[in-house]
Image 1 (cartoon, rainbow, N blue to C red):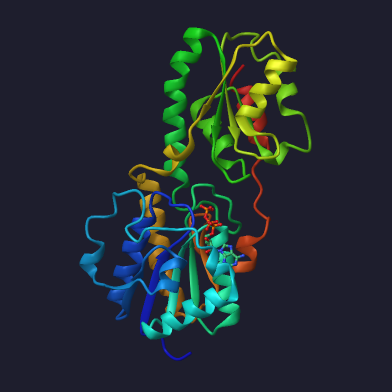
Image 2: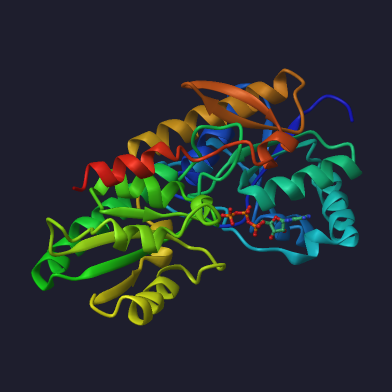
Length: 326
Ligand code: ATP
């Protein structure tokens, strides 16, 4: 592949607040540096169907504050198949796109890695997921906004939990990672977080009850990461009903609320920096890397590292949540 003249941009997988700020930053930095930009609709689906549009600076006006993604997003099973990716590559060539910036989570980056391996396409990925479950980056686009949404929800739930003296399990997203649950608990003063990372080490529910979470309180809010293995908040409430029937346990599932809303300042700044860094990376001849943030600096993370499981939740925070809720 020769010199890059035109960059295609897409958002894929679950939407995350701040994706629009990233689209804006990629588009405008690219144009500033003399590249043409094309927007690809509905993630990899748009590459396969050829839904590709020319982008100008004004295409991304007035979007920095908006949640969701103006490029739309989709799950695209066809892209998992070789024929789908062949079609995607042909449409890229037809549209004269020389390089891609993809914004999404681990599935999106896995797809990018495969496309880059099969065809000679420079691809840079930006971590766009509320789950914060990508390695090599301290944070992902949308994570901070989702965390704030969770914090506000717990603040509201607290009113009814204290009035009725109930135990509430609030289930949050995370795609089997505990970042949202654990940091949501710290930020909101919840009594505990039950996270998949501790699942095999200890019976977190039994610990919670054994520690006598009601010694000095008449209510409790426990943040529970979604986890098919335990059935999440519903699974825990069922267990309480059977094993600890003295407690009046209720469940709140925050669900897709966590995906919405105007991005926080922190997410907008992160998305803007990552977007600009994606273009700098392509100019530098980098390919097949995710841009991450580490210790406040932009870093290039090979796809294989981003998809690895090297990032760990700080389990000391589980103890801190407990200490701070006595
Ligand atoms: P989130 O973390 O928010 O769920 P994600 O990017 O992980 O976002 P996925 O639905 O897992 O979301 O992946 C997005 C898209 O990436 C898929 O719909 C599919 O088109 C593509 N993709 C995922 N896994 C693969 C794979 N193994 N091979 C090729 N393409 C893939």
